[in-house]
Length: 389
Figure 1 (spheres, one colour):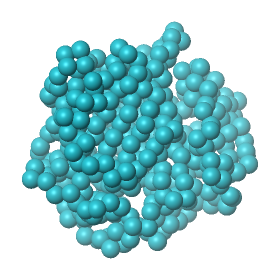
Figure 2 (cartoon, one colour):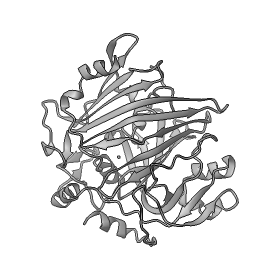
Figure 3 (spheres, rainbow, N blue to C red):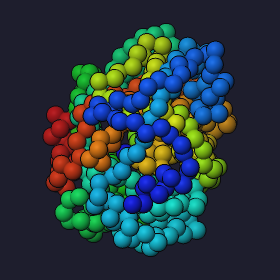
Figure 4 (spheres, rainbow, N blue to C red):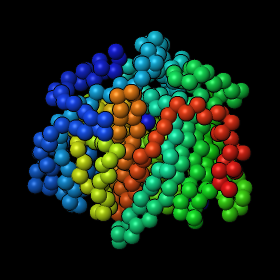
């Protein structure tokens, strides 16, 4: 293979955001446009944007709307109840490991970068979920286009609040979560699959298994392959959800709280133009974030550090700016979120830009389901082989 998602209201109010109240429709329609941003006026909002997005406006021709918004997402009641029940019981040791976690949000009022990241790790995204037919569209600097399609499944073994067994599926080897993904298009990569098993023990590396259709066999890979790009995209396995590597593999500095402009309520019928090698347009509203600097501990890891902006309602990383080992700007990731009143949220568009190669990948997700009660027997090598054939 080539190397290439009444505690929360309190958190929101603590940022002291004054945002006009409006009605949001079922398809994520936001309020009226306040201003259209382009290169003539982007400096007016540059402090509310990552430097990479300012670059796209000034140098690449990006234009977008600033809109009134009312980002008031809350996860389901069962998750909120667990947060309230177990608040104050979690702690982080000197190695960055989370202790005494049962369910819900570990740190309703985080005081450090590592606490913010454990909130991200334990954010609500269902006890299991599936992305059906996710499309990764790629454009290189010459404008050449291609795409791949993938199905992606996840099951959580702890922190469960929706499906039985609640709280934890106990296993002898202490599984934390499993993911199983299979590429379905084009034919050249169809059937290629990956089973990734993460354990609670911070000293135990992930088990990573690939199914290679041309060999008709599964191959065990080093956990270091998590930093490999897959399917020719700009996305590594560790980039899924912006960060799918182990929380303990980096150190985190809380740079502060701030307001940013972000697409946190994108309708499913809104598919932006990507002809310029970036996502044109979009309705950006002002939201509060925690700003985090993540520094990778492994000196051989391809990324030296990342700057993350974390939304304290969904606890998603909505922006990531990534630097290579020399400290030079390398990539950016953006999550453009969709959410519903019943507590479901997911990423509708997820653009990756490589500024060193001027290569672009956007993941488009329009079919997401959660709490499917997928049996644990699905997340096995046997399933990986069957789905790959």
